[in-house]
Length: 478
Image (cartoon, rainbow, N blue to C red; front, side):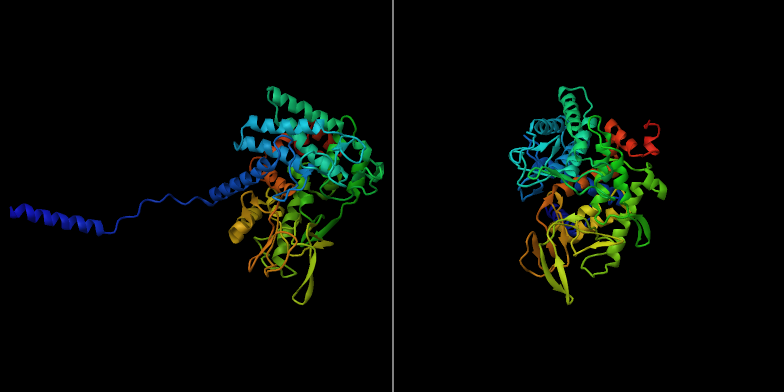
C-alpha cells in the first residue's frame, strides 16, 4: 500500500507545479496594416454619417432636417444630399436597394405633389424651385425663407443622381426615373436668369422680386450653373456662365496659385456630384489646371495655414485643420492675449489670399469632404481629430459639426458645450455638412457618385454648354 500512496503524492506535486508554471500567451492576430486600419476607419465614418440621413429623415415625406438633434425645419439642400446618400447606402449594403428605392420614391412623390405657387404662405416652392427651408411636418415654406437657386440646385443634383442610379426594371425604379425627370424639367431657371448679369440668388414672395444679387466668382454655385444650362425646358443663357467666371480671382496664397474662395465648402459642393478631373472650361484651361486641382491647392493651403497658425489658436496644426461654413460658440467678443476675440455662431469661416475669417472654430467636414482632393493629408487629420477629442467630437453619427479648442474656460455659450480644459464642442450635426462627408468619402473610395452623374444627359449637356471639354467628356459635346 505504501507505493500507490507515494505515486499519488508525486503526481499531485507535478500537477501543482504545472499549474503554477507560466503558460505561453495565446497566439494573437497580426496587427492590421495601416492601409487596412485606414479603410476600416473610413468605412465606419461613412456608415455613421450615412446613418444620420437614414435615421433622422422623415421616411413618409423624405424631409431631411437642417440640423439634429435641434430640429426646427428641413433644408432642401440636405434633402438633395440625402437622396444621394440612399444610393450610397444601398451600394455599401447598409440598406437594401429596395429600401433605398422606397425612401427615394417617397421623397420624390412628396416633392412633386407639394403645393407650388406665388402665395406667401402654404407653398413649398414656385416655378419648380423650392424654398431654402421647409416646415418639417408639412413641407411648406418656413417663416421668411427665400426661394433659393443654389438650394434648389443641390436638391436637383440629388434628384438627378436618383434618376441615373435607379436604372432597374422594377415599377418603383421606373417611377423614380419619371418623377426625377419631371421635377428637373419643371424648374424655370429662366425666371432667375438676368442675362449678362448672371443668375439671381433668390426670389422673395413678399416683394415679388428676384434678387439683385447674382452669382459671380468661384463658389459653390458651379453645380447650379451646370444644371441651369443643362435644362431641356427652361435653360439659362450661356451668358450667365460668362458672368459667373468673370468674377474669378486668381491669386497666390501660401505658395500656391489658384482661383480663390475662402471656405472649403465652395470647393466641395459641386464636386460632390460632378467629376471635374481632366475636364476644363475656358477659365481653367487658360491656367493649365482643372477644378479638381484647384480644390486640391485650396485644401493644402488650408492645412498650411493651420500649421502657420498666425493667430496662435489652440490645437491648430498639421493634423487638426479645416475652415468652412459651420456652427460656432455664439456671437460675442472675448479678450484673448490682450486682444479682442470676436466669436460667431453660424458663419462661413475660411482663408484665401484676400479673405481671412478665422475665430479658432474648426469643422471636421472641411477636411473630410476634401478627402478626394488630398487623401494623404485628410486621412491623418480625421484620425487625429477622432483620437485627440474622442467622444466630445466623434459620436453616434460621426463628427459633430464644429469645435473650438481655444475656448476652454467655462462660460455661457449660445450653442454647444464647453468641456473645461479641452474646448468648445457643437452638439448638432448639419445636413449640408454631413452630406459632403458621405458623398466625397464614397467618391474617394469608389467614384460611385461621379460615375453615376457622368451618365446623366442633363449634367453632360450643362457641362458642354458651359464650354467644358476633354477627359471623360471627349466626344460627348456637339
